[in-house]
Length: 360
Image 1 (tube, helix red, strand yellow):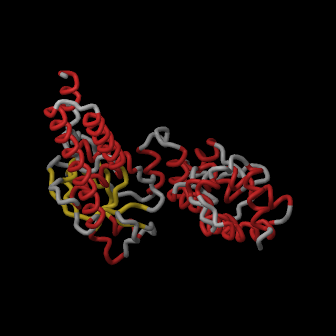
Image 2 (tube, rainbow, N blue to C red):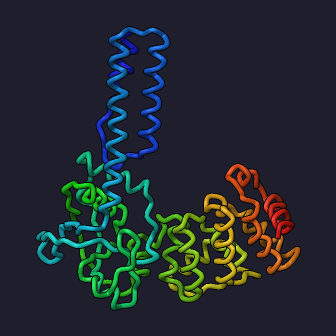
């Protein structure tokens, strides 16, 4: 009985805004299942009552988190965030209220990292020594950089004075912004303003030539730094930001995977030589992605290499025109997730294309 009481009492947790809602939902379900199990076994009333309190606490924790997330999403970006800007000459801090913007093709935002920062900040464990590097938004727009606000909307030149562009510290910046949007009173500490002419080069330099980045990060930033094939890297960056993996993105637009050495050269601003037989065709790649979406093939599946590899193999067997006709006709199959999960290799997708072609 003492062991059971210990288990019951130690399931209660404090709410942290931004905690993973999926995890909270799972914990809520586990608490409810334990309560039902206790009732079925005819456990002591005191134990059942204690577990009911756990269930109530879990339900409230989940509901509060969902509401906080809803409120944050609704208000996100509407109000400025207070930055504690450090004067480089004197070390003095001044408070500056600005909205947050990002340079298009900076590293993608990882929501799991944002949630971790939210938890740290909410629990008073955030390390204020972390520097956040920002730049003046108006200066960057006038230099030709495209900026998006925190909701992904393009920042107009005439509105740029209202924004700081976060160059380094994107995840913690998003975390602070979400907390502020949820009605919390937080300031972004240790903010440093930089005058940056070449954003891509700066991002590579401050991150140790990208050695701490994933391939996804490197390819996206290469759209800012590459000496040539900028349209290719920008198109790949768009797909990566949608959830496609880097290798599939390169195959969609070139038919080949790009090597790590090639990406490193692009990050240095050098011209790159694509792999043998690679053929850049941006329009073809976008057409493939669009028709996949029309056929109810979500990014979760289209990012798997054998979808594009299977399509390319089918195009080689027939023609590009016939392959696209079959892909366009695939919407007639009214594909469901269960059917797409059965596609395990190139041949499986070719079979789907052939089936679709018969309905055209």
